[in-house]
Image 1: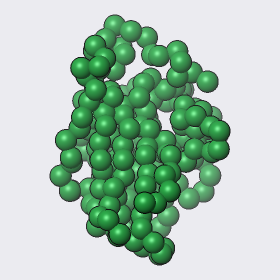
Image 2: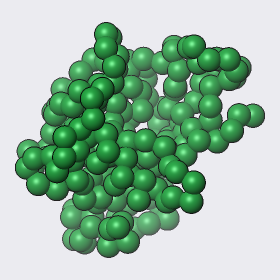
Image 3: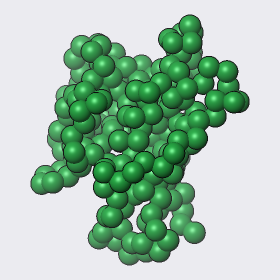
Image 4: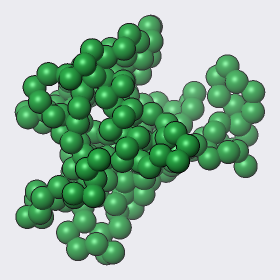
Length: 189
């Protein structure tokens, strides 16, 4: 068993419903949701706000939690360029809105940001990105999903079935605005 890594990401939308994606590095790199890893003694909400601003320059407003995604790979498969098995990663994916019409700061070099229609994502997106955007735009909340991760996983792989916790939370599966509620105040910093 490998060490557990906790991470965060967000499906950040603008006023027109487009999704913010980041393409790291050069060449045929894949598009991904903005996010990052939790620091010691840091919760997912604070990490999401911090990491997304640091990576994109955008301040965001968290709306709710889309779900928790477990990145999986075949047992014993090694990541490209590293020895040993792929890390065990759990990602808290939030639904978020861009706060403002422009970034609050310049993004650091290395992340090429672009806005995309959720129904016309680039072909080269990470499997996590495709699954989370699909779940978020369908209005799902409380999703628990295993997502393939690693060199063999491609965006065209079929998505495993989402397991929303709808029976535990009335109205789960819809954004708060569609349930007649305001965004959860506990998600504010």
